[in-house]
Image 1 (cartoon, rainbow, N blue to C red):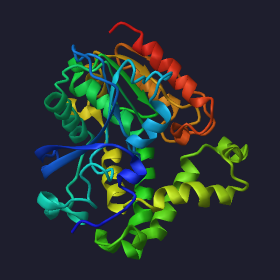
Image 2 (cartoon, rainbow, N blue to C red):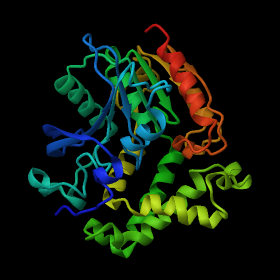
Image 3 (tube, rainbow, N blue to C red):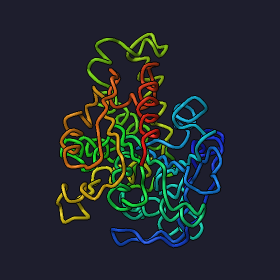
Length: 354
């Protein structure tokens, strides 16, 4: 049965609504009997319904990080100009997820939760926008990491519905390196005896596995330069261990293990070429959106060269590299030079006719 976890509440994540889509069939053959998407909106949808921006979430992330860092007056994602919709991905702990599957979803709780793909998230988002808000066309789709995977999926699956797209620090086709990295994250969790085959009674039962999981993120989520230059000092920590114990470990150990595993599985298998029999060029060739590809310079998961190789296959796209020594987890906006670059490139994109 579903379990309680106080982290996944309004107290920690602020305002959001749960919007029901009813029974939702999944690409892997499973079904979510009553899919609930956690949605946070900012700004007002205009009469023409053409000022909507969709923001997609990353692994472990919710709408909270976008509300606190990316969205607001003076930013490119300005709620005074746009209707910004942040949809929490399936399995992230706020939308329908393994740990919170109750009521009509009780049969798929915990270890029985079905496999979910990036495409399922995007189909659910499209249904939500169309049925709940009457939005048929998006001024922009933007997301980082797994959110970038969803952005590419939008570009390929619904090309006529996306006028602009900005995948940040994420690729259209997951790489073997990323698959293996995510496999290590999964094994860090599932090797904990407290995991109990996914039928633990609390995330606290799996705290050792979640702590190991955080340690892997320390090695690869941040760049070698982040550690060499001790950039954690600028975040208010006095030692490397203090940063691990005061930032990364508390961030991950409050989360639900099954929820993380649900997201990890679809991260590993993100691939828009599924639409074209494995032909990545044919898939990306479907894109009609004006796109800005935004890799992070020191990213160890999604290096610039991986973005560049996909850029060559993507019409209407240009690349802008974000200079950030933090690496992939620079997505959190940890240093003051990060977000101004994002805002500049997103604003340039939004000002481009599409």
